[in-house]
Image 1 (cartoon, rainbow, N blue to C red):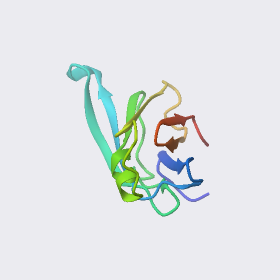
Image 2 (cartoon, rainbow, N blue to C red; image 1 turned 135 degrees about the horizontal axis):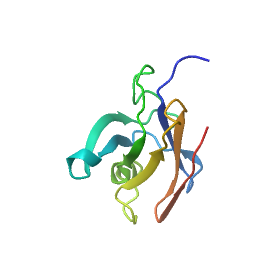
Image 3 (tube, rainbow, N blue to C red; image 1 turned 90 degrees about the horizontal axis):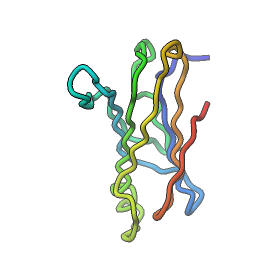
Image 4 (cartoon, helix red, strand yellow; image 1 turned 30 degrees about the vertical axis):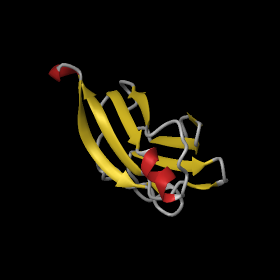
Length: 122
């Protein structure tokens, strides 16, 4: 298998059954030593298949901690002509547990104008 970012994501628009294209994505880590502030790690934009597979360099070593992925969904809804929606952005907070730093973390977002869901993908 080719080297890949240790954290990837995928947006699927479940209201129409298509990939969520051109969704801005931001990845951060919680810095507990600095008054629990969020530190930026990476930004990206979903591709034509709704994926960001290059958030981090494949050689990036994750550290145990709390991570936050923000999807700027208002930009997506505007791009597909949807004017009525409930979530202008979606934040998914997840943990990389001690001892699990070498695992791959895939964060899918299933999105519709008034709801969303996620799970840990593979």
